[in-house]
Image (spheres, each protein chain N blue to C red):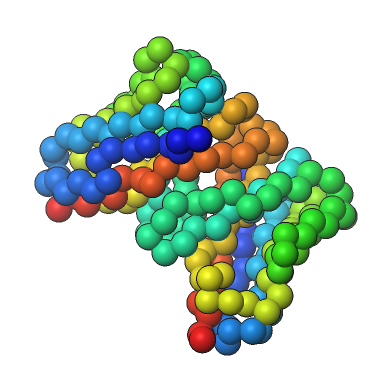
Length: 115
Length: 109
């Protein structure tokens, strides 16, 4: 079974530029998550999709971050404009069902550096 | 909001020694999940506990969920260099998984 795919793996941009990340979840997984992981901290949920609908985006900085999951499969996360504090690893995860009581499968992440 | 606190933040052990990390919450948890993240890697699911007082074992790893469902522990017996990484607990009381800050384990050969 193929895992969660993410691209790119690394990205370096200057502040005020825009960037987009792509995620392809495990086939058949209805729930998709985007997490932000700052060095030395646990992953923080940014947004959770159930199929192509948003379940939770309470911690998504909506003035600069946006995400979509068209057709309930792939998802993109965009940052525009980026700030220095956005430097982090952005992890995509998917699960067969929504929480509680589900196992989440994480992708390799995209390491973003904002200079 | 819901928070889970993990201690210690870091632990250095000699290979062969035991290791324990603790996860605590001020509120009752519906479940607790444990993940391992190797250096430079991504979190990998280890286990989920849902019942009060539940104990589960995976080879040298023992997971416990407290009777009051407010705390959990992960114990590794006789650590090996392959156990190196950061161990996260998380709980999904509110429908979203909230992670603790993790315990980073270093094992000296």
